[in-house]
Image 1 (cartoon, rainbow, N blue to C red):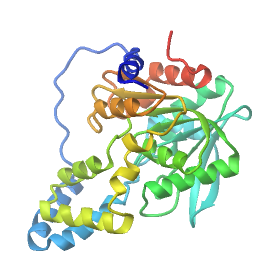
Image 2 (cartoon, helix red, strand yellow; image 1 turned 45 degrees about the vertical axis):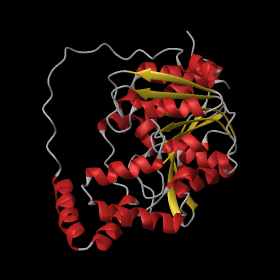
Image 3 (cartoon, helix red, strand yellow; image 1 turned 45 degrees about the horizontal axis):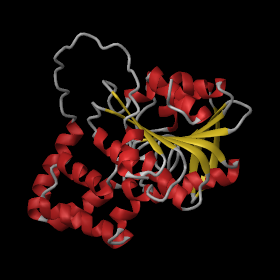
Image 4 (cartoon, one colour; image 1 turned 90 degrees about the horizontal axis):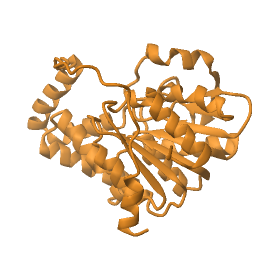
Length: 311
């Protein structure tokens, strides 16, 4: 696809978010105590032994945080049928909604959980689909303490083998590159909706080390450990801006202009790299509230059903 034609696809429009409330200056959230302790530990440990600090950073990078299911997801959780499957020696929790129709898979992001995309379940069921979600390895109610993108991709492929081909897949954040790798490895689906995806894996590591104020030498040691275990070309292999280049599956990338976790330009970059993708930029929804936004959900369901973002 030529750059001019791709730009025309990317500029098709924006999803209208809910009416904005009067602007108020928000007080910054206080820094969590655990983050303060990690920063202090890396500042002191990085000065004394960059190697040990790098080793700890490496372990922390592969250790997601488990969060309690918030009130906004309780309705989806209560309405779901829950099953458990053994995948790669881990027990993976799965959530089902609907009894008939083609299956749509929901894939959450890092430190997320299967019910995080639960707001999509009822609209999809009403549109004639069965819906499947899951807690990734070391997430939610699934077992494990550490995980990585490849284990997520393995889980997606194992679920396809168990439940059959997915009609479509909706991903959030880190779930996007996990799905892209799974598609490289043989996952088949007809349409993809990727919400708030990261384009560059190395950039995520850089943000991680900046958040924890990991010193440069410790950061270099951490990166070296990752490349030793996964290969020096790991960044290209798992960065979504590279993994989608050969894909022909129709896709819709949605990203919010006020996403503080992953800049919207990364979603646009992915849509440009994808051979058959639409890009929509929302406003005032951030990185997570976008998953509960009625207009975003409606647009995603329509794309899955018709392949169109118009009207």
